[in-house]
Length: 55
Image (tube, rainbow, N blue to C red; front, side, top):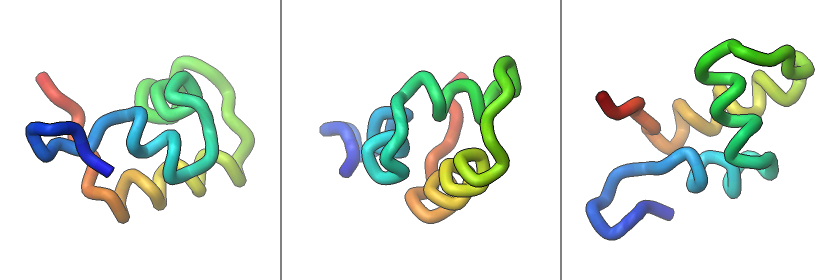
């Protein structure tokens, strides 16, 4: 579920949560309104997979 370097990507989170990579990005940045259920699912997936923002 990770890229060749071993880091979890937004795409990995999206696939595991059953949403688009854009939705994951919106949850992370807060730039769009996401339903509470979807937000919770994405946030839980981020915690479970250990996703960390780069930069």
